[in-house]
Picture 1 (tube, one colour):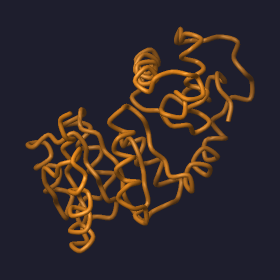
Picture 2 (picture 1 turned 30 degrees about the vertical axis):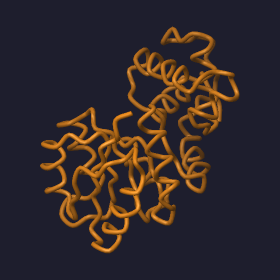
Picture 3 (picture 1 turned 120 degrees about the horizontal axis):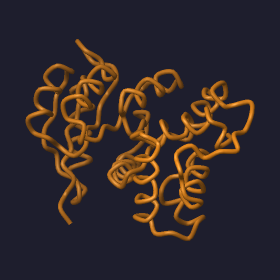
Length: 217
């Protein structure tokens, strides 16, 4: 299997060096490039086209959220995984809304980052457990007070079940175990429901479904 090409953006030289060293030990990952500030990162990433960017939010110049917005406009196929010291739901919301596919706090180890990269590359969204509960609670206000009897996007019964499990915070692998489906089958269902709903991520799908009363927290 071809290695996943990563680009790392971190303004602390020592942490950047440690990340490169740690992640280079995994044979399925390769480092395509690094940067310590946002503007340079955007330009290099658009040229190198790595598969995934591991991105700090706190950067000199433009911050990680602005970097995410620019990359999603100029190189939408590149996945973005936020790695930062922030752990409040507002920052999580901004990063995901900007187009990031996941969010980890810096204290996690290399194995956790490796697993998160795999989850994102298989179509999933990553949220640290410590953040996830507060994050979903942040969306309580968007949940419809009246449950809709309609399915405005024409989702199948299986797609609805996948969406409901995702709303509970399950990863693709966990959804697969609960529903007795292969992980790639879960990803296929997610791809179909994203297309039907006109969204790109778990979070967008969940928020939209909450607004229509199709799912509950």
